[in-house]
Amino acid sequence: MSATRKLRIVAGMAKQLDYHTIREIFDRFHTAEAEPKGELEHVNVYTLCVAVALSAQATDAGVNKATRGLFAVADTPQKMLDLGLDGVTEHIKTIGLFRQKAKNVMKMSQILVDEFDGVVPNSRAALQSLPGVGRKTANVVLNMWWGQPAQAVDTHIFRVGNRSGIAVGKDVDAVERAVEDHIPADYQLHAHHWLILHGRYICVARKPKCAACLIRDLCMYEDKNL
Image 1 (cartoon, helix red, strand yellow):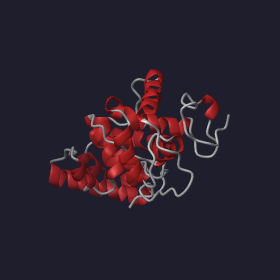
Image 2 (cartoon, one colour):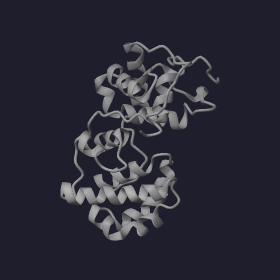
Image 3 (tube, rainbow, N blue to C red):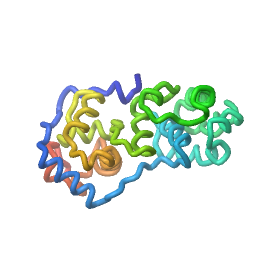
């Protein structure tokens, strides 16, 4: 079980917001940035899958710095296998848990070659069968590459969802269901990117930037830093 999936919240959850308030929140997010994009660099679905898997317990900026050189020489499963474990390890050694992640990348690439003809599958179950790919990673790939309204709940979404009342839940699974249940369908495709970016740059963990928040009047967070 991933560290993100183990997240729990026992106190301080906001009340779940009503439909009209949530729609207003996402109207504002949409007006501010209609097409939010993920920040992990990739050149195809395979490199996206690898990048997301590498991002566990690491920053997107740190992953991008490591993978630019890696993807320049290995942008397919077979090329990754040809590069070898030592080569992959050398490229990603600046990322946390790099040794285990390098092994997972190699195992993932081997399975893709042996069982999927070198093509990344586009079902959640098949993606999650790959080493290093959990539900969150699978949902990111399904959303970013195939345009499915899959919700990848990370620490940012978990925090923003519970603080604001947008998606309240005691664990990651509950927050994922809350996002799916309460955010209007026409905003589902980009919902997780709006929430991640909001959590990364505005609704940060220790000192949320409430004065700069475009939804501060709608948010249920009681300890606003204004």
